Amino acid sequence: MKAVAVVLVLVVLAAVQLAMAGRLEQQTGITCGQVDANLAPCVSFLTQGGEPSAACCSGVKTLSGLAQSTDERRTACNCLKAAANRYANLKDDAAQALPGKCGVALNVPISRTINCDT
Image (cartoon, rainbow, N blue to C red):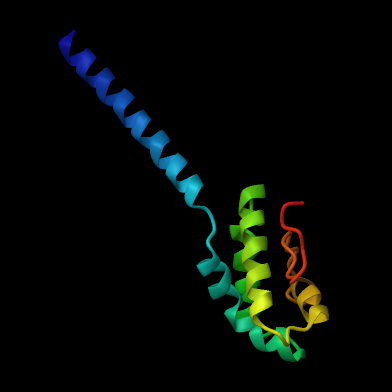
């Protein structure tokens, strides 16, 4: 009986620890560092036009996979907005065309003026 009680307590503690680890993972989500790193190969396309590189499209695809929840998309949107504003010569038409040119449905626009709260 005592052994069963000990096992039960250990199972409950393990379940609590797993739940806490899951919450921590959800809170961390996507970061601006991840957004910047994934789109860094796209800077030349976004500022000069032409065709996006394979590395650029790979980053766009990765970014699309990272931004799944509403909070992650909002964070990614704010990161993209901040990044777009760092480049005065960013071509808005290239930014809007990027996901399509890479064959990705990116639910986060690349724009200097987007309201990320909507």
